[in-house]
Length: 438
Image (cartoon, rainbow, N blue to C red; front, side, top):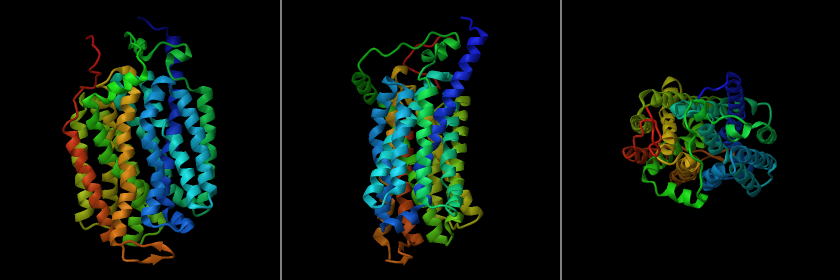
């Protein structure tokens, strides 16, 4: 089937407009996720919390985010990305503003919960949109690019945020980012379309001269049950849980305090290390996704990155390292190796029917945030067990031995991911549930 060049040009303009707006929303997701690590000391001082309580406050985002992943997949597959992401940005914006003006720990927790509720639908909505607007052959690449761009938000929430905090308070920052999130929600409602067909265009497969995938006909409960009952989806769930959950917990909360308490760095200096980790993660996502598509394989990339991630956690525990090149190298390598997790989304959506890709992506994404939700307070809890009672300006000061307790826990999570990676089903970068013509 020949496609009119004018239709092709319209398709490309619409595709990249949709993608740009949804990626901008996703950048806000990462900013909301990682910012508490830079303002950890401010939050402990403002609300008089312990390490475990601070971990619980930061993890409030992860609790609701985790609980919402399966509903997010159902909503993305039924209502479409446009409605889901627009509403999510509005709720997250309101929660961020509430967090910024909170006078009590309870109010801050509610604001953080609303942020988590709002942003919980953005990633799955974006990844579902990508299945509609992009070819299967390049899903690893586009997934890597998506995570690369999204991580710009996490990078902004590290070093650049630390510099901004030298001029304005943390409260002003969170109110401002809340307003920006609301504006992105409005843009999503006005411009984004969930499918090319909604914009009067052929589907992505029709643009390649192929038959479109059949649409869903069963009730979403039947489809969701089918996804849960597909054994090949679950290894990716536990890879996300172990490798990326531990990284997000560390970079999003404990990485900056470790450099501050363990080596005497100030907040701006310490945030450089988490910035490097997140930059490595962003690059790793792009490199690993592209490598997987190039090799035509999913499992070897996932397996290798799990091995390397475990090795880096062990290096942080056992090797003599400190501020400077050794610390930057280890933080950067930790992020780079964890970037291989992005291939897990492709591996999961390629073992289920294309019509329920959003549900499969949501299920494995649940593992990531369940891991982070458990790890953030658990890291603080194991440090509290050996804390010697030292306070600095009213804030708990932990020793390197305390932090090593948390690093051992992170290594255990990475080991679990490695075991799960051994059971990933190889799809050869194609959906194995549909017939393919040469």
